[in-house]
Image (cartoon, rainbow, N blue to C red; front, top):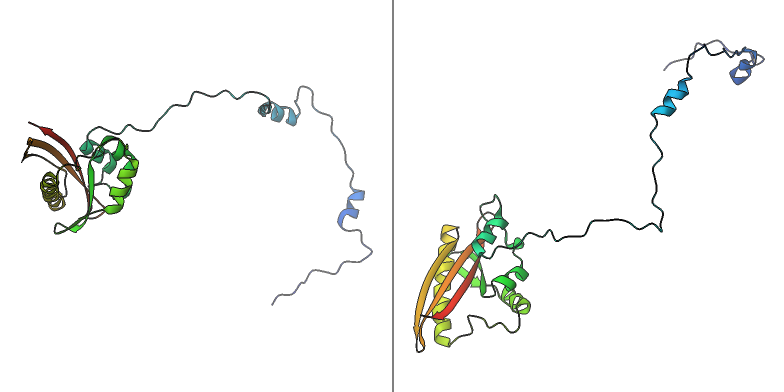
Length: 206
């Protein structure tokens, strides 16, 4: 605990602002040739900003589309999505891009190479985004559809095991002749493969 040892003031003493009444103030004349201190300060100030009037038209450059173009090859698109990662995340996959360029796509959900199943929500969204007049490559005969499904599933399993894109080509003999198909499969995941996208092309007779 501390105490205040300062002497008591006489209430009659002049203190505070009242004591300034006895102070003599003098204004010294400026020395010849000496500029006022405020002159340099005013010179250093920037010009006042110019405000645009509401009625004045705003000039702007023409807007241009800066959206990166989607490659025509699914593996090149996969590489652009993954950047420096081992593989891209499923969340980066846009169904609208696939519907426009790769309408015959199948997305598999997978926990391992032995636990692979098609993603029905993806298939429904792809059909909704796809042009109604476009016929799917999977809408062939039951025989071709069964052979095609087995082949696609085997490629998807290999993609999970290798954690890398795969390509393959095959042909199926049908009553109308042999049909040729190409497939490209790409993996998606964060730490491990959890989705595989398969893009099928072809269906033409030899």
